Image (cartoon, rainbow over all chains, first blue to last red; front, side):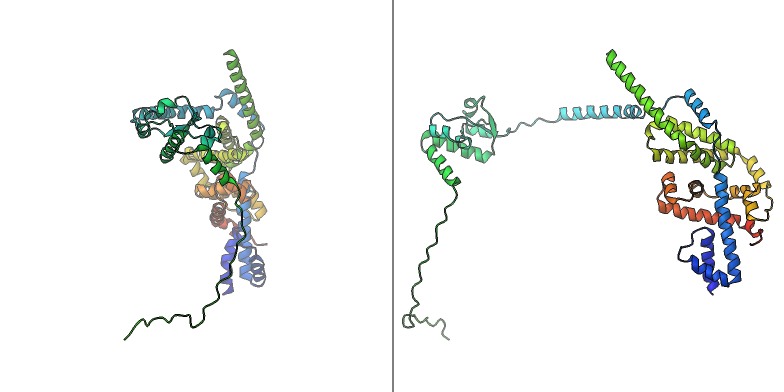
Length: 233
Length: 187
């Protein structure tokens, strides 16, 4: 029974693949069992034969003239292929065709005729010196330079602000800014007051102590009103 | 314009020089590797040298994309193996017939056996009967002292695959060479 167990191990030993932990067990069994000892010996000889046999087949050195012959062949033959140039030579026509295709596609695309990004321009307001002296954010002039729908709402804005720097402003904010500017220019809103308010808003908050007034004393039972009977059956 | 041409020419020369220098480094160890791989397939020194020459020459011509040492060695091994196999196939029926006729019985000890010409023939025949993918692994393992990691690098295979192929190759070789061992007295 145990010999059957070891027969597979013999094969592993023959091809040099016996697990390290199994070797002592196999050897001790082989010491006691004559047939297994012979089988193991045979397996080890096969292993030696295989390894030494194949090693003997690949043993050897090329002749001393090997390198000299090789150099002569190299000198006679073509030089190494310039790999990078060769690769570019293959890739370049494809890249050129792709570039031409892109140019054609982009050239045929319909142009966008909608409104351009809505812009406003900064311009110091001559009619509001307080505003002109204020920080940039408060000197927003709503004579906006716009195109498309926004310019329709403010027809004279474009001419009036030509040559001034543009600021891209969301549409809703532009209209609000334009209205504020109109209000400042017409005197309906005091620009200086706005700046002062803004500065006040930047100041740190003052924390006042909380005043706690004592509660009134609880009412006596006589003062309590009896709740009316809510339900009658 | 002349300056540009001179600069291009100079860079081409320096490129060629560095290429030559690197190839010289490969010449230090790779011919032996190519020769042994070819020998493992052809079992003939003159033919193995011929195939190794051809493999090295091809390697030189493609050296621009094989400058990394390990990649170069792996590529060279595979190329040599294929060239050697092609050479075996082109040899034709005559050789195989001769080889089959040379069956003699073995010597009396392992030492005698492994050094005998006949044993070499038997092993060579057993090796030739292996499938190609097992054969290259076995040949490389014998060249590299059965270092599976190195064999994996050279064959371009995962180490686990090399181990399993080596296992199969040894098993088949052992089966083929069993008859030789049976005739050797134990001890």
